[in-house]
Length: 177
Length: 189
Image (cartoon, rainbow over all chains, first blue to last red; front, side, top):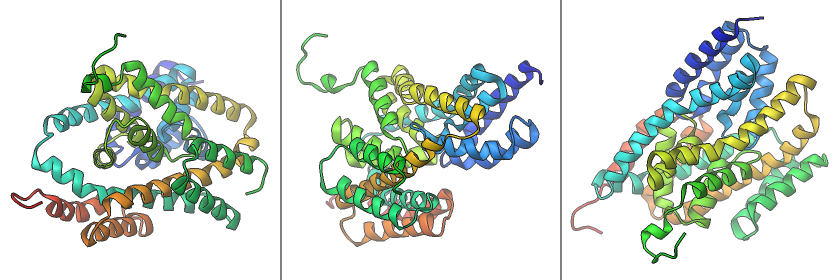
């Protein structure tokens, strides 16, 4: 077995640096995380990394919680907690600073321009992420039909989306998609 | 709590409410679609932010390092409660999901697969994708008025979604055009 203390040190250094490198979202550092966790530190196998990636993508909460499982496999529950905090803290501190600046700039032209100009961009990015998610899910026609029906229900009815997600999960559990 | 007059102070969420709200958002997002859930709760249900402010914050949160959803929680938390607010929101977003994912990870490393989970997810992912599409439709109806926004929207979608250009390359091309278009002009409305 490896030295526990050294594992904690590696977890801390790895995830706090990945935190600041994860520009564009947590998934941008997955290749680097994979390389370190599987090849360098040999905390887990290739297959295990792919599987916990799938688990973390679909479990509730931020998708970056894959780091919780990498930390868990490397050094148990304390490793899981350390990895999660190390991954969140540096980036969160930066967001805090930017938000403070943003609040002060309430009436400035740059903020007005960003709020108005970025709205169409963001809608494009949101649609793109839905499109990429649906491609990655690798659905057959039944999956696309379910997606289509749910999209209509979410858009034109006032049904709580939680009921829609729950019902779709049930349909999946029954093996109908 | 005492009854206070309906000032902006009254609308300011407490730390507990921030943590609870982001916990609610996180748990609802089984299968993904966390951004869509954030909008559903923050803009539609709680009315803490307008659609414009939410959308611009969302893109800023994507540009900055860190998980987008954690960044959004820190942004909203900071806006309403400074550093304690940011910690409350981020804690609310992650605490229960960390417990859940540890339970799943424990089961996975012990039994090597979780079959019922996989099939349930297949359905839930379809609904999460649907919620994301629905968000694009609903926000698009509000801000895609006129030809310039439509072109900006379509170019961003095609480059990022279809051609899979990295976010930074897309923004480097489109964002300057968007800012020039949206820059407030004196006298013009």
